[in-house]
Image (cartoon, rainbow over all chains, first blue to last red; front, side):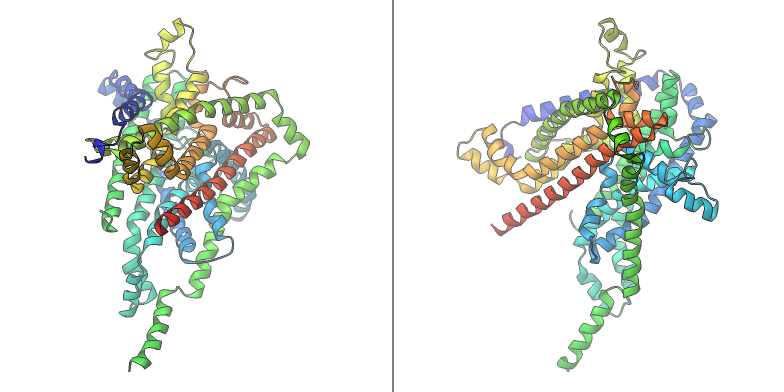
Length: 275
Length: 291
């Protein structure tokens, strides 16, 4: 470490960083671990295999998976148009992509419910046209999670597309590849890692999402009750062990997802020659 | 030979490098459709619903004591949490971007951890510690200190969810800028703080402001984590997002969307500033590259 000889302030900076990290994040999170360890494994297992808990896990992970897949496709189309084409209002639309990051989730929740409920602008249209109800059904949860997941995909694909070396496309074209062949064999393999990372980020966010979902979900046990809502329900019934066991399981799953995302990002950087 | 083949080569290259017109139009159409349906329509809906019963209903619902108390609490929470998260972010970035030590990548992962934790869990962990049945709960209630279902709990939950915002923005930026200028200042006899304020801060100011801005948006808009620890006490522990929820559940839609319109305005202002700051950052980078 050559720079640490002259750079001052390492000890206070790292000291405060670790202290604050422990105080706000690590100690509170380990409280949850300790609380769960007060349960026997059988008790823990009984909580997790409860029908209502299982239904909520299936719903949360299933809806997030579908929403992340749709967001990945939508996000790819948006990123492609924003990077490769010019059209009026492009910069405005580009800035607008981050809206789901900046808009408080409760606002997103009530607005999406108002749009997609059976009497809402789009809810009525879809209801009259196809008889499908979006809000207060699992489908409504998927719609809310697409909204939340979209910027993750666009913002991961966009920089990779921008830095993509078009010389590779030129090479493919001059060697006689059609546009479709060049896209499938040259562009897609280079963008895919970023698309997968964006998908994983959207998926991880969707599993834990609360505010934007509960207003549109309907919140029926066994049908449209997501895991975060079930945790709150258990807390309100003073079932602390139940809430903690479900919370810890979700936390472990999100941590595994985080590791996966870090691995994917490393893979993306290595493939694009940044490592 | 060359003179003849070159133009036809350019023509074919152009054909295969640009997408056919119909693909272009379909993709731009889809992009505008998705953005319109998922992003523009929600923003418009906030306004339409908030003014559904006219300007007077809108303004009087914002002047209600409960709404005003919620706004005051939201401002109080942001004014406490944003400075703390900023100080943490700067110190973490200084340690990580300016020194080498073991476990650095683990530290970066841990700093990002709150991003992947559900907001509901962020609230739950503080209930487990400070709640009535929590480890420290009995001690605090003996000493008449309320944390859960009170303002301190809301501050703690907000500190947790905003934790990575500033650090995450600063660490890559400071790593990219490098430490040559700071070393030059130090070797010319500048003190540590002097170097920080006169060299480091001017170099990272736009990125730092961007992190603070996003941190502020999250602090004012956080819903899930705050909802677990707040207890929804009217006029006391309802932040603006919780006021939106309570009004909505009581079928006071104008009141709910009026509160939501303030938060949506905050989001739009945040996006505008973010765009400007990113533009400034790129401009600085270009100026630096030119020398």
